[in-house]
Image (cartoon, rainbow, N blue to C red; front, side):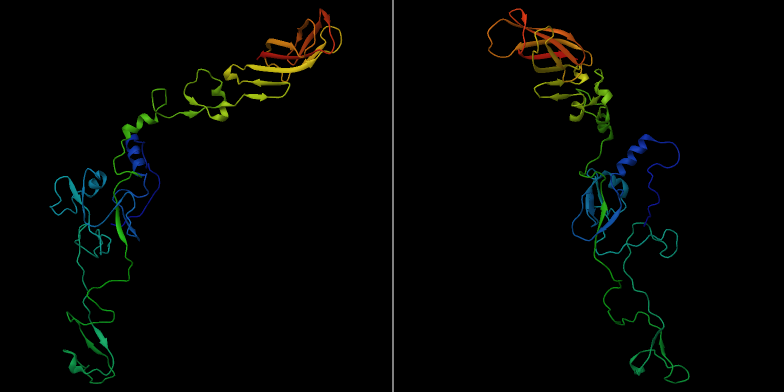
Length: 334
């Protein structure tokens, strides 16, 4: 029975039947449904198909195809739990009459032997010896100007390009039938077994999870999304210069470490002025400074005023403000 594709939507009018939709989606895994007959120009059976060669197969191995074909092509010797494919080798496929009346009386899937149509009213011209052809007659007026006429029936006459069968021009193909819908295996797709895999993934559950948004990365209570490498670097920055910093993202507490080098200038308090490499969003939590060099004496460095983007320090030697003292400092904050 030749059929035409009429629509693409997997769901027609009415309510959505989830169970039916799951079944439909399983069928849509293939461009052709189980039972479709497709011609192939090479002697290689594609995955998902079986050659239509009248062979016997297990119902357990091909349950969908067995359910579709039933026992239509069985001969009775298949054995329990088996079914038979139709035979297509060397055969032409003909559209089912289905009430048209051109090939009446045919049941779908039945075999029909070859047949040649009876030749009738064949006319011949030329100087033929009519005695050679039985039952030939010359028209009543007896003239050769008329064509000789003869009704041929069961004659065994050989015509041009004649042989033992009647056939059109044709191309040899291998007819195959769609046997299963799974793209890589011949078994069934267990939807119930797949359902847990579509659930939310957890530490003990294999499932699915979405990639987090930037906002979700900041939500320390969110345990249902995944972070990509790009998301992991969101909010993180670093500068490895002499005066530099490391800023951790807010989802890691927003800790900031800053460091730098400076030299005292003058012999008054706050003789060291530092511009922070980056401004403190909240403020500094702790600062440490040390004198650099091998100078002899009792050096001290104390911190003075602190703002979000600057810091004052005082360098002293033996209790007096000292000029030209090189220091290194580090500060922690957020």
